[in-house]
Picture 1 (tube, rainbow, N blue to C red):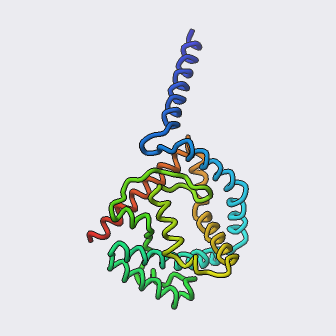
Picture 2 (picture 1 turned 90 degrees about the horizontal axis):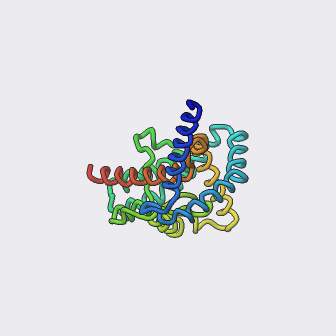
Picture 3 (picture 1 turned 120 degrees about the horizontal axis):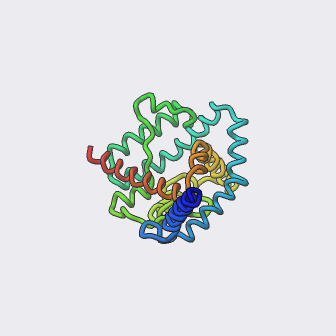
Length: 233
């Protein structure tokens, strides 16, 4: 009788967990594109597992730490052009002046951005993009979406990504095309390298998709709030 009671309790616990999963597994106001997003998320996961992560692991294994750091710094320096453009679009003139100094110092003293000299002058990296610019001018809430190969975004940040790449960065102006594509592939590997430490955390999550979605939305909300506070100071 005691065994039957224990079995019944375990079954009830299992059913409650399953019902909880079903609750997470439906479209909502936060995630109306749930079915599409989940499908693309796991396709991206498969591509990452088969191609992007193995290539990144080989890069991390073979390249010395100092080399990885220099490559990361160089791409971060290029990104500062986009940061400055968005500073201007947000009328953030102090940030514009600060980030411009950072770009000039790292491009010259840092040998094309290979070394982050500007941080020694208390000019640390400032992140900005057109998604944050749209949020600054009122486009705060936006639908979550997972883009093929790119990963989690919102509709607002997807528009921002197009504007950043097409108008506010150096990438469209790099010729020939195969050089640009190789450099973009290298930036993807560099960004994936930064996320390797998060892999175990995602794998351990009860629902990896929900975990990544919530983490992304929370991170972007925090970035919007931090930018709002920065501009009030």
